[in-house]
Image (cartoon, rainbow, N blue to C red):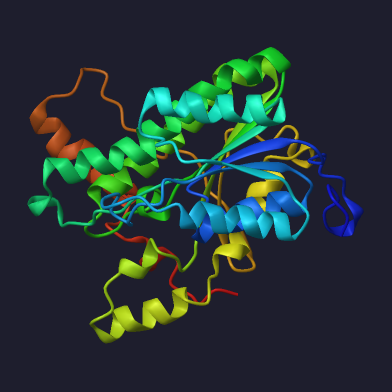
Length: 314
């Protein structure tokens, strides 16, 4: 496969383009960065090298390893060790792309941390830290790239969401809220920046990585789920991310996808599914006796991601 050319001879139009991938020191971020390099893009490898929870001493090693892997296949990369959770730092990462490569064409908002705690025991600090990286960080990085995107009349954002937000999961109120918030952010970017030729989409990846390695596996059910998830490598998510950032996805914007090994899913958006009407106006009593019973058949079940995606990956 030559640079910029995808499967079946499709020209992705990525040869010489510049992409920023946050959280690119390992897992899905590294896989995405390498896939972009294979497609001919130049990569800004953004990673601060902290622990999964975003604490502890930073390490230069993860980002350096990703850069080395890109260079081994003949690609070009530069490292940003800036935190996405700070506005000034996000601007410096985008400026690095402009200073080093002369342009920026895509941003993949992949950086994240986990601080899983059951809701009634969650410390506000755990909430704030996760929101700061996933949601605030994605806004900061996107906003920093918005000006050069608008000036050049093109650009693409790919935000990594999660079925924990799209569907639900135990012990992840902070993570779920941030990931569902990303869907709203992406749709707003798609609407606001369409006239500038800028696209914005979300991908919910399925992969066994540092993030999912913290999932408990004590019960037989949990062990079965973990073994199933280990079949889902970070690399299987990268092709869709690269495609969405490429010229091959022109016109694709405001959408939410999921990738799981060989499966690609398109998620629906929130839309009204049932309605009731009272010409005289509603009261608490009439709502309780008529409206809720009438709407109940359409209520969403209290399920989790693993309930919806209950079959083995194919």
